Image (cartoon, rainbow, N blue to C red; front, side):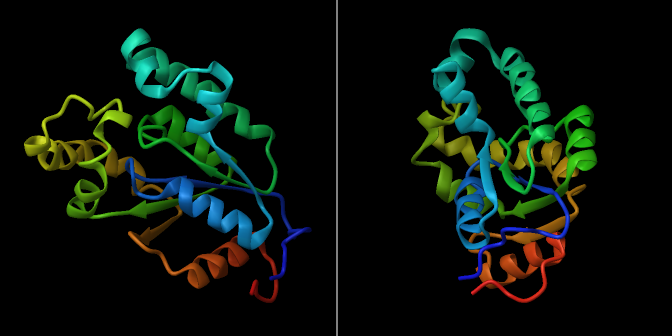
Length: 185
């Protein structure tokens, strides 16, 4: 494996996509293959505030969460050579998407509704937006949310299809984005 220790340009790569699309997993894998740092907005939130996102939503509401999420997003400005996994709703405002676009390169991990449903139906309690949605209505809920969220996701610089992106292609894409010559292997 060749580790990217001196990319030819300083950059940030923001991973976008619906909940359970694999942003965190993919970000960690890319980080391990390239030597780039990894930052997960949801993990940073939970570590810093010492509360799970579901519990925070219940206690303070979505609006309070989105305000803190934006503050954490703006902290990525100081990061260099980092893969950043955003929350599913992070890029879904003009202000947030403009910030992401101004700070780095964005990649949308696109998943179809059936795959998202399959991934989410058994972990609903861990996801504040769907924890109270009956399993029988979950697929329709995902469809409706994607109608609102996908226009933001589609503004990403790159779109890759999940559920299992080809890691060789991902590494080649990262090499292209960073200007790194050669290959990671």
